[in-house]
Image (cartoon, rainbow over all chains, first blue to last red; front, side, top):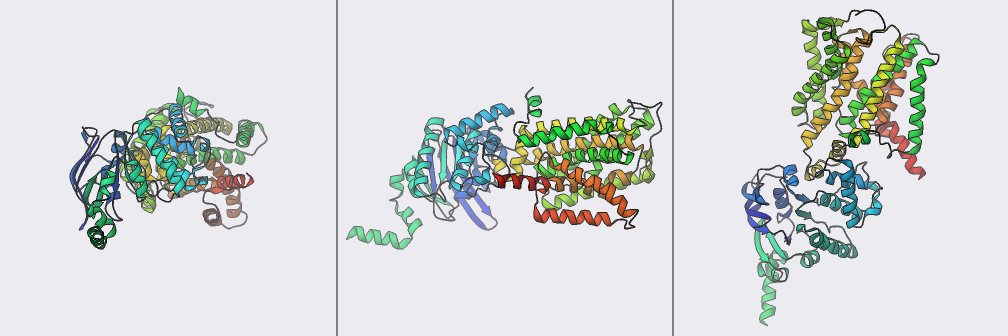
Length: 249
Length: 333
């Protein structure tokens, strides 16, 4: 039984079709990458799964329960956490207080919320920033705090929306190792969208490709990148033809 | 048990703030023993009342980040409940005060539900509207005395603790000081509670808050209810302290604006903000206002002065006087 099952999900904004009949599964022991060119509907799909948008048609089943009609905060309480593509820390919360907001989802006690928050921060290697203000941290560190906050809510599945965006190559390497540890040591299933393809390829067991809101390919990372449909989606018809001609010659 | 521990946990406040708080506390406790005028005593009582109003305002206005200009309606509900129960059924203050708080909280749930569907200016306008509608209703409702209001008769010899009727003001002073201390300690506990953290996360970013399982709408309504309890409690006190109440002085827009202004001037979203704001504006209102209106013959000019202060604060340091203190502290580090 899959942890997350997406059945024929479509999302329309007026006349604009953002997602059309998308279906796939994510298992508890999996890392799944969701890729596609800009405007392919990745973030929209995330928002539909997380309950931020109501779907136009189709169902989302999580942990054996139909979560399609649930609101965003209810979905979160089921154990489906997410990070945001654009993350702004503006507030007057300290880092540890920020992470505690995540752990307060599972406990009403300040003491245990604090312990849980510090444990997660230790795990992610940001324990020493606990007393700092969010606004004083560099972007990469802020993103880790956002990750810590989501993890502190003790999720079964984590939706990661462009966590690598704006990071330099060495930071990306660190992030890949970190996400791997989150998956293996904490047993959290991951579903990630990413522009940094390298990251998706290294992390994912399975990759799903969206184009113009539709699923055009699914499979192991190494196979998917060779799929002519995928190449066309990313690079255009020309490239596919040239590749064929080159192959023939 | 942990709630009590949280309420008395001041560990996350800077040392010098706690030191200053101890000095202020000593001053407040001993003020009646020092030489003072009766006008000075009245000003101190008002300072404590407005500090409590401001603490209530701060929950939604400061921690929640939504400007509320309708607090006066809860002053009115608290004041009228106590007055009506005392006059008609001889109910003591200590019983009518919680009833007033409960009625006000009930009303806050009813209007809070649609109110918090609104954002920004729309929310602010709606809070003004609900407050003014309630005031208009009270002005034509004969049961509560209509526009002339109610006068609480004497219930026996002074000092009457049951009905909170005293000849000397220092009795009132210590009653409201007790409420102030309880209110402050409770607020400190609230700040450390799950709802307190969640409220600050909501102010920071509602989308992120929702993704962390926070029911934003319901959290705001709950915080609003706590805020209402503060305001209604002081409203009940106001009825006993003034002996007579009318819609104009308990439910007017002026009062709502004054409450909001003090908290904003002092620093919205901080523990000290409402207290600092009340400490500046209440004496200013009383001394400067009466001097300008009386001797100088410029009645009403003090209101224009408040307006200028607020504009200056909004432009220079939106987080108020406490924000200036924090900025200075950050620079020194």
